[in-house]
Length: 342
Image (cartoon, rainbow, N blue to C red):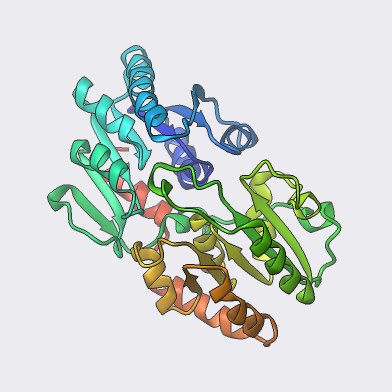
């Protein structure tokens, strides 16, 4: 029996690791989960009936993040001293790499964000295993293991993805009613410092364009209630089912942009950081995703897609992607079986 510690710092981490954790538990291994209060992380952990240890909230601002780094290191160190995990696992988590080194345990670090320079400098050098999509730009030597897939294919691959029931009914959406998903972020992550996103005026114009083609549902990290009528009012665990029936995704959320693309939905990513991540460059080659530095640049593409009969074309693109890529959860299970006798 092996004891694994998973550090969860983002809602997407819950989805990424959930199937692996269930498989480990099924095989009789012990799992410990530490988690920080970012967006819907705790809601998702509760929804999937995971026991977890609350280690606080993500800090905002570089100085507070620096202090938070030391504090979180100490919290995970204290937990690990007490519970004695054999392996510490995280997605872009510098904390597990630091603690594992101090306790002479193994760390397994996953990552798919090349431009998160500070986080990468604080985590990759201390990791024992560094796992990324094959399209990840950069080579970190023998410990760098690349897999032919994306983070999102750990939970949205057809082998893993199961739709939640009655999601459209909850929102009063008809069976064949068209709707678009929009995502705006806070730009408070450490790798987002110095950048800004879609303005209120631009968001208003975008919604106006999209409403010409159906309903608009908004996911926002902002506390501004100016667009309250568009806010998605559904449990965050159900967002992928909602996405799977949508006409189009457009927004600043990188994870949601990739999720929409692998589900075979037209995905438009808006970010000043365009061109810095290998997974986005690759998904553009499949024609499943389009990236623009500003929202203004995307308006013609939105009109072109929503005014066309695109669904069969996108279904073929999705099938090609899935033929080329792997089930990432199966890959992770194989990896842990080989390296840690899972």
